Amino acid sequence: MTYKKTILVDLDGVLNTYDGKYDENFIPPIKNGAYQFLEKLSFKFEIKIFTTRNKFLANKWIIENKLNKFVADVTNFKSPAFLIIDDRCINFRGNFDNTLKEVENFDTWYSSL
Image 1 (cartoon, rainbow, N blue to C red):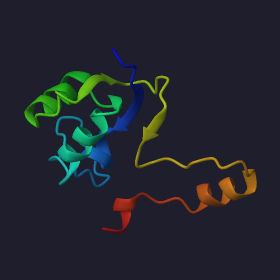
Image 2 (image 1 turned 135 degrees about the vertical axis):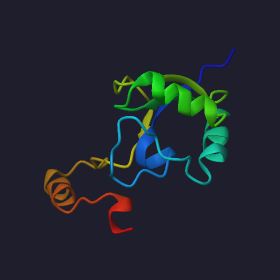
Image 3 (image 1 turned 45 degrees about the vertical axis):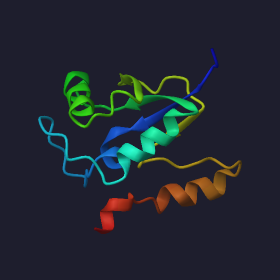
Image 4 (image 1 turned 120 degrees about the horizontal axis):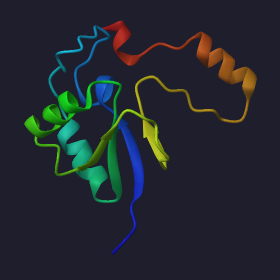
């Protein structure tokens, strides 16, 4: 059995059409291409979905969108992982001043929609 490194993938803003308007009882529709994206990742990585949402609701959404065959777990914690894919992240590249500038200018990809 081969060991796969874990990747955490955020649900809102990455896998679905989330636009910043949060509704705790509704997860927006799957984003075009998300199924194929997870399918390709699953060949080399163990995929865990990271979300602050209710885990039951998130699991239901994953099953309804037939993503469960690619997803090992749903977690509310940023557990140890090789990589995190999120719509609200900054990659630290070793320079604090540059990182501060990125923080000050940060905007989500969907804020300009």
